[in-house]
Structure formats: C-alpha cells, structure tokens
Image (cartoon, rainbow, N blue to C red):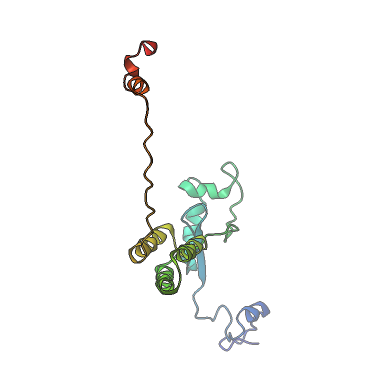
Length: 182
C-alpha cells in the first residue's frame, strides 16, 4: 500500500500494527509517544505515557549515575546495563474500592432479612479474604451489623465461693510478714 500524501510504500510492519493507516511515518500527523517508569514502591510500579521527547529526556536523566534511588534499578554493584524493562512479574494485590464497600454493604443489609448473624459474618470474612473489602471497611460493616443484630451476650456464670479455713486465709493475707519470706 502507498502513502496517500507522498506516495511512498508503507512498510508491512506498520500495516500489521495499524491496519487502517493510510500514511507513512513521516507524513503521519500523530505525535510519537514514549513511556517513563514511575516508581511508587518496590512491589508496585507503573508507567506514564507521554510525548516521546519528554519521555526520552526523563529516561536519560534517570539513567545517569548518582540519581538517587534510581541507581539501584541498574542492578549489580553500581554498574550493569542501561536497559530498562517494563512490567512486573509479581502479583499486585487488588485494592478494594468504595463501590466494592457499598455493594458488600447492600448485600449484607439484604442478608439481614433472611440469614442469621453467623452467616452474615462468614460472608463478610469471605469478602475480606477476597480483598473485596479491606479491614477498615470490614470493621465498619461489623459495627453496622452489631447495631441491627446485636451479638447475644452470654450470661456470666456466678461461681460458687469456696470457703477457706481461717488459718490458710490468715497465711495468704500476711505472707509478706511471714518469717519464711524474709
């Protein structure tokens, strides 16, 4: 296929990537894009898409020696290749959202009409383990549950008093004054 502007042949690779393109790279009005690594934490990084010139400038400054914590990205003892790999192989845990909390809360309120307290708590524990809610949201929902269906308080059993003879009672009361402890 030929470019509609300059009549040059569009490379096959470009046509594979952009099957509906009608212009070559030189004639294209699209701005080139680049990416910059954003380091939030050792386990949760991402990239920022921006125009190519800015991305190249930021990546160049990140590669120079002595750029703080980014020097550690090189690997080894201060040296190594300057190749930056994107992506991560570790699993980033799901973070619960406000919407997740509201959905779980609505379901819990519906369950109050036809389930007992233990089943509702089991449901909340499942949602906590699935990371649909976090521990703070779990406590909030548990507090709401306690308002509507209070936990049954078990009566405290009164213990029978055991009578102790006077000599043993006197020994316990006065053990500090005893000759054997001095």
